[in-house]
Image (cartoon, rainbow, N blue to C red):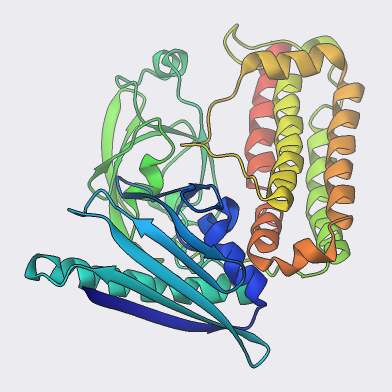
Length: 399
Protein backbone atom coordinates (compact mmCIF):
# COMPACT_ATOMS: atom_id res chain seq x y z
CA UNK A 1 0.00 0.00 0.00
CA UNK A 2 0.98 3.63 -0.53
CA UNK A 3 -0.15 6.42 1.77
CA UNK A 4 -1.35 9.87 0.80
CA UNK A 5 -0.99 12.22 3.79
CA UNK A 6 -2.17 15.72 4.68
CA UNK A 7 -2.11 17.67 7.91
CA UNK A 8 -3.29 20.95 9.38
CA UNK A 9 -3.37 22.70 12.74
CA UNK A 10 -6.78 24.09 13.67
CA UNK A 11 -7.32 26.63 16.41
CA UNK A 12 -10.46 24.84 17.61
CA UNK A 13 -11.35 22.13 20.13
CA UNK A 14 -10.88 18.46 19.19
CA UNK A 15 -14.64 17.88 19.58
CA UNK A 16 -15.37 20.27 16.69
CA UNK A 17 -12.65 18.69 14.51
CA UNK A 18 -14.14 15.26 15.27
CA UNK A 19 -17.65 16.53 14.48
CA UNK A 20 -16.40 17.84 11.13
CA UNK A 21 -15.83 14.23 9.99
CA UNK A 22 -18.85 12.62 11.66
CA UNK A 23 -21.78 15.00 11.18
CA UNK A 24 -23.64 15.46 7.89
CA UNK A 25 -24.09 19.22 8.23
CA UNK A 26 -20.47 19.79 9.25
CA UNK A 27 -19.15 17.70 6.35
CA UNK A 28 -21.08 19.87 3.89
CA UNK A 29 -19.53 23.00 5.34
CA UNK A 30 -15.95 22.17 4.40
CA UNK A 31 -15.69 19.00 2.30
CA UNK A 32 -18.62 18.22 0.00
CA UNK A 33 -21.96 19.62 -1.15
CA UNK A 34 -24.24 16.94 0.30
CA UNK A 35 -23.51 14.34 2.97
CA UNK A 36 -25.50 11.74 4.79
CA UNK A 37 -23.75 9.74 7.51
CA UNK A 38 -24.48 7.41 10.42
CA UNK A 39 -21.87 7.85 13.16
CA UNK A 40 -21.09 4.27 14.16
CA UNK A 41 -18.91 1.43 12.83
CA UNK A 42 -20.43 0.14 9.56
CA UNK A 43 -22.60 3.29 9.49
CA UNK A 44 -23.02 4.77 6.00
CA UNK A 45 -20.88 7.66 4.78
CA UNK A 46 -22.16 9.06 1.49
CA UNK A 47 -20.52 12.24 0.17
CA UNK A 48 -21.54 14.06 -3.02
CA UNK A 49 -20.08 17.01 -4.92
CA UNK A 50 -21.86 19.12 -7.54
CA UNK A 51 -21.49 17.41 -10.87
CA UNK A 52 -21.16 13.63 -10.96
CA UNK A 53 -18.53 12.91 -8.29
CA UNK A 54 -19.39 11.02 -5.10
CA UNK A 55 -17.92 8.65 -2.55
CA UNK A 56 -19.99 5.89 -1.03
CA UNK A 57 -18.48 4.21 1.99
CA UNK A 58 -18.88 3.60 5.70
CA UNK A 59 -17.17 4.14 9.04
CA UNK A 60 -14.73 1.45 10.10
CA UNK A 61 -13.58 2.74 13.51
CA UNK A 62 -14.59 5.67 15.72
CA UNK A 63 -12.64 6.80 18.79
CA UNK A 64 -14.44 9.96 19.91
CA UNK A 65 -12.38 13.17 19.60
CA UNK A 66 -9.28 11.12 18.77
CA UNK A 67 -9.47 9.00 15.63
CA UNK A 68 -11.76 8.08 12.73
CA UNK A 69 -11.26 5.46 10.03
CA UNK A 70 -13.60 5.17 7.09
CA UNK A 71 -13.97 3.41 3.76
CA UNK A 72 -13.66 5.60 0.66
CA UNK A 73 -15.05 4.34 -2.65
CA UNK A 74 -15.61 7.07 -5.23
CA UNK A 75 -17.25 6.58 -8.60
CA UNK A 76 -13.83 7.24 -10.21
CA UNK A 77 -12.00 4.52 -8.27
CA UNK A 78 -11.47 0.92 -9.36
CA UNK A 79 -11.44 -0.32 -5.76
CA UNK A 80 -12.32 0.90 -2.24
CA UNK A 81 -9.62 2.48 -0.08
CA UNK A 82 -9.31 3.46 3.58
CA UNK A 83 -8.87 6.87 5.22
CA UNK A 84 -7.63 7.41 8.78
CA UNK A 85 -7.97 10.78 10.52
CA UNK A 86 -6.34 11.45 13.89
CA UNK A 87 -6.89 14.46 16.16
CA UNK A 88 -4.46 15.51 18.86
CA UNK A 89 -4.68 18.44 21.24
CA UNK A 90 -1.81 20.87 20.69
CA UNK A 91 -1.18 24.44 21.85
CA UNK A 92 -4.84 24.97 22.72
CA UNK A 93 -6.02 23.72 19.33
CA UNK A 94 -6.10 20.49 17.35
CA UNK A 95 -3.57 18.87 15.04
CA UNK A 96 -5.52 17.02 12.35
CA UNK A 97 -3.58 14.36 10.44
CA UNK A 98 -5.07 12.39 7.54
CA UNK A 99 -3.71 9.23 5.87
CA UNK A 100 -5.40 7.85 2.76
CA UNK A 101 -4.10 4.37 1.90
CA UNK A 102 -4.19 3.45 -1.80
CA UNK A 103 -2.81 0.51 -3.76
CA UNK A 104 0.91 0.77 -4.52
CA UNK A 105 0.27 0.32 -8.22
CA UNK A 106 1.21 2.49 -11.23
CA UNK A 107 -2.46 2.67 -12.25
CA UNK A 108 -3.15 4.56 -9.00
CA UNK A 109 -0.36 7.13 -9.29
CA UNK A 110 -2.51 9.87 -10.87
CA UNK A 111 -5.34 9.07 -8.47
CA UNK A 112 -2.94 9.43 -5.53
CA UNK A 113 -1.71 12.81 -6.81
CA UNK A 114 -5.27 14.06 -7.18
CA UNK A 115 -6.24 12.77 -3.74
CA UNK A 116 -3.25 14.51 -2.14
CA UNK A 117 -4.07 17.85 -3.75
CA UNK A 118 -7.75 17.58 -2.85
CA UNK A 119 -7.11 16.57 0.76
CA UNK A 120 -4.60 19.40 1.25
CA UNK A 121 -7.11 21.94 -0.13
CA UNK A 122 -9.95 20.41 1.89
CA UNK A 123 -8.03 20.52 5.16
CA UNK A 124 -7.13 24.14 4.42
CA UNK A 125 -10.86 24.78 4.10
CA UNK A 126 -11.54 22.82 7.29
CA UNK A 127 -9.15 25.14 9.11
CA UNK A 128 -10.89 28.22 7.70
CA UNK A 129 -14.38 26.95 8.53
CA UNK A 130 -13.56 25.90 12.11
CA UNK A 131 -11.56 29.06 12.89
CA UNK A 132 -13.53 31.77 11.04
CA UNK A 133 -16.70 30.12 9.71
CA UNK A 134 -15.75 31.07 6.13
CA UNK A 135 -16.08 28.34 3.50
CA UNK A 136 -13.26 29.13 1.06
CA UNK A 137 -15.17 27.39 -1.73
CA UNK A 138 -17.85 30.08 -1.43
CA UNK A 139 -15.47 32.96 -0.71
CA UNK A 140 -13.61 32.36 -3.97
CA UNK A 141 -16.74 31.51 -5.99
CA UNK A 142 -17.82 34.34 -8.31
CA UNK A 143 -21.19 36.05 -8.25
CA UNK A 144 -23.40 36.37 -11.31
CA UNK A 145 -25.63 39.07 -9.85
CA UNK A 146 -28.91 37.38 -10.76
CA UNK A 147 -32.10 36.49 -8.92
CA UNK A 148 -33.24 33.10 -10.29
CA UNK A 149 -36.95 32.48 -10.83
CA UNK A 150 -39.24 29.60 -11.76
CA UNK A 151 -39.43 28.59 -15.40
CA UNK A 152 -42.69 26.81 -16.13
CA UNK A 153 -44.43 25.74 -19.31
CA UNK A 154 -46.88 28.61 -18.87
CA UNK A 155 -44.08 31.16 -18.46
CA UNK A 156 -42.29 29.88 -21.54
CA UNK A 157 -45.48 30.28 -23.60
CA UNK A 158 -46.20 33.76 -22.18
CA UNK A 159 -42.64 34.92 -22.91
CA UNK A 160 -42.53 33.32 -26.33
CA UNK A 161 -39.43 31.33 -25.41
CA UNK A 162 -39.10 28.21 -27.60
CA UNK A 163 -37.33 26.06 -24.96
CA UNK A 164 -38.62 24.42 -21.79
CA UNK A 165 -35.33 24.01 -19.92
CA UNK A 166 -33.32 26.98 -18.66
CA UNK A 167 -32.97 29.57 -15.91
CA UNK A 168 -35.42 32.48 -15.99
CA UNK A 169 -34.22 35.68 -14.34
CA UNK A 170 -36.52 37.23 -11.76
CA UNK A 171 -34.17 40.19 -11.33
CA UNK A 172 -30.59 41.43 -11.45
CA UNK A 173 -28.25 42.99 -8.93
CA UNK A 174 -27.17 46.54 -9.72
CA UNK A 175 -23.56 46.88 -10.81
CA UNK A 176 -22.80 43.16 -11.06
CA UNK A 177 -21.74 41.10 -14.07
CA UNK A 178 -25.15 40.04 -15.37
CA UNK A 179 -26.56 43.57 -15.43
CA UNK A 180 -23.38 45.03 -16.92
CA UNK A 181 -23.51 42.41 -19.67
CA UNK A 182 -27.04 43.50 -20.59
CA UNK A 183 -29.15 40.67 -19.20
CA UNK A 184 -32.71 41.60 -18.21
CA UNK A 185 -35.55 40.25 -16.13
CA UNK A 186 -37.35 37.32 -17.85
CA UNK A 187 -34.32 36.43 -19.97
CA UNK A 188 -33.89 32.64 -19.95
CA UNK A 189 -30.27 31.41 -19.73
CA UNK A 190 -29.71 28.09 -21.54
CA UNK A 191 -25.91 27.85 -21.62
CA UNK A 192 -23.04 29.24 -19.57
CA UNK A 193 -19.30 28.72 -20.03
CA UNK A 194 -20.05 25.94 -22.51
CA UNK A 195 -22.31 24.05 -20.08
CA UNK A 196 -26.08 23.59 -20.58
CA UNK A 197 -28.25 25.35 -18.00
CA UNK A 198 -31.38 23.46 -17.08
CA UNK A 199 -34.30 24.25 -14.82
CA UNK A 200 -32.44 22.15 -12.24
CA UNK A 201 -30.69 24.68 -9.98
CA UNK A 202 -27.57 22.49 -9.69
CA UNK A 203 -26.61 23.06 -13.33
CA UNK A 204 -25.66 26.69 -12.59
CA UNK A 205 -22.89 26.15 -9.97
CA UNK A 206 -21.63 23.19 -12.01
CA UNK A 207 -21.21 25.49 -15.03
CA UNK A 208 -19.05 27.99 -13.17
CA UNK A 209 -17.08 25.50 -11.07
CA UNK A 210 -13.43 26.56 -10.96
CA UNK A 211 -14.21 30.09 -12.16
CA UNK A 212 -13.28 33.16 -10.11
CA UNK A 213 -14.27 36.79 -9.94
CA UNK A 214 -12.83 38.66 -12.90
CA UNK A 215 -13.07 35.69 -15.29
CA UNK A 216 -15.13 36.19 -18.46
CA UNK A 217 -17.55 33.54 -19.70
CA UNK A 218 -19.92 33.17 -22.63
CA UNK A 219 -23.65 33.17 -21.83
CA UNK A 220 -26.36 31.98 -24.22
CA UNK A 221 -29.93 33.02 -23.46
CA UNK A 222 -33.36 33.67 -24.91
CA UNK A 223 -35.09 37.02 -24.80
CA UNK A 224 -38.53 36.01 -25.97
CA UNK A 225 -38.13 33.95 -29.16
CA UNK A 226 -34.69 35.43 -29.94
CA UNK A 227 -31.56 33.50 -29.02
CA UNK A 228 -28.63 35.72 -27.98
CA UNK A 229 -24.99 35.25 -26.94
CA UNK A 230 -22.96 37.63 -24.76
CA UNK A 231 -19.69 37.68 -22.85
CA UNK A 232 -20.10 38.31 -19.13
CA UNK A 233 -17.43 39.18 -16.57
CA UNK A 234 -17.98 37.34 -13.30
CA UNK A 235 -18.15 39.58 -10.25
CA UNK A 236 -16.12 38.97 -7.10
CA UNK A 237 -18.19 37.74 -4.18
CA UNK A 238 -18.50 40.19 -1.26
CA UNK A 239 -18.29 38.23 1.99
CA UNK A 240 -20.35 39.80 4.79
CA UNK A 241 -18.80 40.51 8.16
CA UNK A 242 -20.80 38.17 10.41
CA UNK A 243 -20.55 39.20 14.08
CA UNK A 244 -20.02 36.24 16.39
CA UNK A 245 -22.59 37.61 18.80
CA UNK A 246 -26.17 36.48 18.27
CA UNK A 247 -27.58 39.78 19.52
CA UNK A 248 -25.31 41.80 17.21
CA UNK A 249 -26.19 39.58 14.25
CA UNK A 250 -29.92 40.03 14.85
CA UNK A 251 -29.52 43.81 15.10
CA UNK A 252 -27.42 43.97 11.94
CA UNK A 253 -30.03 41.96 10.02
CA UNK A 254 -32.85 44.13 11.37
CA UNK A 255 -31.09 47.22 10.01
CA UNK A 256 -31.13 45.58 6.57
CA UNK A 257 -34.75 44.50 6.75
CA UNK A 258 -36.44 47.63 8.10
CA UNK A 259 -35.98 49.92 5.07
CA UNK A 260 -36.87 47.09 2.68
CA UNK A 261 -40.09 46.34 4.58
CA UNK A 262 -40.98 50.04 4.71
CA UNK A 263 -40.54 50.32 0.95
CA UNK A 264 -42.53 47.15 0.37
CA UNK A 265 -45.45 48.49 2.39
CA UNK A 266 -45.45 51.71 0.34
CA UNK A 267 -46.09 49.64 -2.78
CA UNK A 268 -49.61 48.90 -1.49
CA UNK A 269 -50.59 52.47 -0.60
CA UNK A 270 -53.78 53.50 -2.41
CA UNK A 271 -54.68 49.95 -3.47
CA UNK A 272 -57.69 47.98 -2.24
CA UNK A 273 -57.67 44.48 -0.78
CA UNK A 274 -59.47 43.22 -3.89
CA UNK A 275 -56.79 44.68 -6.16
CA UNK A 276 -54.03 43.18 -3.99
CA UNK A 277 -55.68 39.76 -4.27
CA UNK A 278 -56.23 39.94 -8.03
CA UNK A 279 -54.08 37.74 -10.22
CA UNK A 280 -53.00 39.40 -13.49
CA UNK A 281 -53.35 35.95 -15.04
CA UNK A 282 -54.88 32.75 -13.58
CA UNK A 283 -51.43 31.15 -13.54
CA UNK A 284 -49.63 34.13 -11.93
CA UNK A 285 -49.59 35.20 -8.29
CA UNK A 286 -51.47 38.15 -6.89
CA UNK A 287 -49.54 40.87 -5.07
CA UNK A 288 -50.48 39.38 -1.69
CA UNK A 289 -49.46 35.91 -2.81
CA UNK A 290 -46.03 37.35 -3.59
CA UNK A 291 -45.93 38.70 -0.02
CA UNK A 292 -46.94 35.23 1.17
CA UNK A 293 -43.94 33.85 -0.73
CA UNK A 294 -41.70 36.26 1.25
CA UNK A 295 -43.35 35.00 4.46
CA UNK A 296 -42.56 31.41 3.48
CA UNK A 297 -38.94 32.40 2.85
CA UNK A 298 -38.59 33.71 6.41
CA UNK A 299 -40.27 30.59 7.77
CA UNK A 300 -37.65 28.59 5.90
CA UNK A 301 -34.92 30.63 7.63
CA UNK A 302 -36.28 29.46 10.99
CA UNK A 303 -36.39 25.86 9.79
CA UNK A 304 -32.87 26.20 8.40
CA UNK A 305 -31.54 27.50 11.72
CA UNK A 306 -33.18 24.64 13.61
CA UNK A 307 -31.64 22.09 11.25
CA UNK A 308 -28.16 23.63 11.74
CA UNK A 309 -28.51 23.68 15.53
CA UNK A 310 -29.72 20.06 15.54
CA UNK A 311 -27.09 19.01 13.02
CA UNK A 312 -29.75 17.37 10.84
CA UNK A 313 -29.89 19.68 7.86
CA UNK A 314 -32.39 18.76 5.15
CA UNK A 315 -30.74 17.05 2.19
CA UNK A 316 -31.95 18.13 -1.25
CA UNK A 317 -30.73 17.99 -4.83
CA UNK A 318 -31.81 21.56 -5.57
CA UNK A 319 -34.01 24.39 -4.37
CA UNK A 320 -37.33 22.83 -5.34
CA UNK A 321 -40.13 24.93 -6.77
CA UNK A 322 -42.72 27.34 -5.44
CA UNK A 323 -46.01 25.69 -4.58
CA UNK A 324 -48.93 28.00 -5.38
CA UNK A 325 -51.27 26.24 -2.96
CA UNK A 326 -48.96 27.20 -0.09
CA UNK A 327 -48.98 30.95 -0.79
CA UNK A 328 -52.68 30.79 -1.61
CA UNK A 329 -53.37 29.23 1.79
CA UNK A 330 -51.40 31.97 3.58
CA UNK A 331 -53.46 34.69 1.86
CA UNK A 332 -56.76 32.91 2.55
CA UNK A 333 -55.81 32.81 6.24
CA UNK A 334 -54.83 36.53 6.14
CA UNK A 335 -57.20 38.00 3.51
CA UNK A 336 -56.20 41.67 3.47
CA UNK A 337 -53.23 43.95 2.80
CA UNK A 338 -52.93 44.81 6.49
CA UNK A 339 -53.04 41.21 7.67
CA UNK A 340 -50.47 40.03 5.12
CA UNK A 341 -48.02 42.88 5.71
CA UNK A 342 -48.39 42.40 9.48
CA UNK A 343 -47.77 38.68 8.97
CA UNK A 344 -44.55 39.40 7.07
CA UNK A 345 -43.28 41.73 9.80
CA UNK A 346 -44.18 39.25 12.54
CA UNK A 347 -42.43 36.43 10.70
CA UNK A 348 -39.29 38.55 10.26
CA UNK A 349 -39.46 39.46 13.98
CA UNK A 350 -39.73 35.79 14.90
CA UNK A 351 -36.62 34.95 12.86
CA UNK A 352 -34.68 37.79 14.47
CA UNK A 353 -35.78 36.91 18.01
CA UNK A 354 -34.85 33.28 17.32
CA UNK A 355 -31.46 34.54 16.14
CA UNK A 356 -30.97 36.51 19.37
CA UNK A 357 -31.63 33.32 21.35
CA UNK A 358 -28.88 31.32 19.62
CA UNK A 359 -26.77 29.61 22.29
CA UNK A 360 -23.05 30.14 22.83
CA UNK A 361 -22.46 26.46 21.97
CA UNK A 362 -23.91 26.97 18.50
CA UNK A 363 -21.99 30.22 17.98
CA UNK A 364 -18.79 28.29 18.74
CA UNK A 365 -19.64 25.99 15.83
CA UNK A 366 -18.42 28.69 13.48
CA UNK A 367 -19.06 26.89 10.21
CA UNK A 368 -22.80 26.49 10.82
CA UNK A 369 -23.17 29.85 12.57
CA UNK A 370 -21.39 31.79 9.82
CA UNK A 371 -23.40 30.03 7.13
CA UNK A 372 -26.64 31.06 8.81
CA UNK A 373 -25.44 34.63 9.32
CA UNK A 374 -24.12 34.79 5.75
CA UNK A 375 -27.58 33.80 4.52
CA UNK A 376 -29.33 36.52 6.56
CA UNK A 377 -26.85 39.29 5.76
CA UNK A 378 -27.13 39.08 1.99
CA UNK A 379 -28.40 42.37 0.53
CA UNK A 380 -32.15 42.38 -0.04
CA UNK A 381 -31.88 40.84 -3.51
CA UNK A 382 -34.96 38.70 -2.93
CA UNK A 383 -37.29 41.34 -1.50
CA UNK A 384 -36.16 43.98 -4.00
CA UNK A 385 -36.68 41.66 -6.97
CA UNK A 386 -40.21 40.86 -5.83
CA UNK A 387 -40.89 44.53 -5.09
CA UNK A 388 -40.90 45.28 -8.82
CA UNK A 389 -43.08 42.24 -9.41
CA UNK A 390 -45.57 43.49 -6.82
CA UNK A 391 -45.70 46.93 -8.43
CA UNK A 392 -46.34 45.41 -11.86
CA UNK A 393 -48.99 43.05 -10.47
CA UNK A 394 -50.86 45.85 -8.68
CA UNK A 395 -50.73 48.04 -11.79
CA UNK A 396 -52.17 45.17 -13.87
CA UNK A 397 -54.95 44.63 -11.31
CA UNK A 398 -56.05 48.26 -11.59
CA UNK A 399 -56.44 48.20 -15.38
